[in-house]
Image (cartoon, rainbow, N blue to C red; front, side):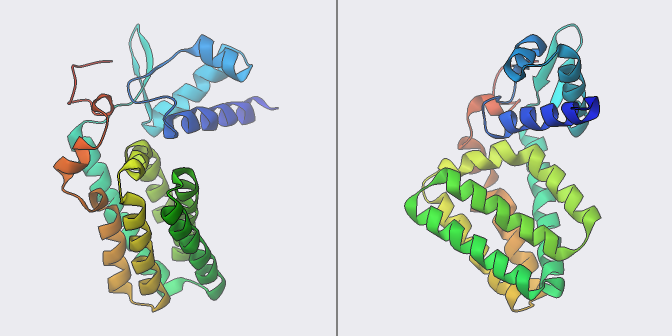
Length: 227
């Protein structure tokens, strides 16, 4: 494997470890340990970590090492606020531009979300949820916008993903998806925008309640300062 491809692969694998909660906010990224885990040398691991730093998912502390980034409550609020309105714009444009085949694919993933919510299958729901949003992004046909939205989702994924463990949240999310789908299918741009904004905006709760649903160690200003 070429060096650039290896680094990109390692970056994606470490990012998955972060997104899936195996590397939680505040975790030290031990280069030696990661190299052993992924069966490679420390040099490509170091380069992969540097790329994650550029994405904001990891930060370096001089003379200490690299850590999974913890967000403050203000930073999380800002990310969710920005994500909500960019998702709304995606939905508005999708209501204008979505093709029939894209509509059918969105309907399929909507139904998979509803099925997973009914069976309380968090992993199946997380997968179907990702696919639903991906077809939303494809449908809007604006790569600059979708690149920004994907970055915002990566930055906030672990915090939002944890929310699916809250009672009734999957059913609520699936209901939101149905509203987004119906608005897009009927080409109602205004309704699509609002439905998508409402879906992201702190999972239908007050921000204080949303913060209380997160583990204390996820939020930088809820615990004693750490690297």
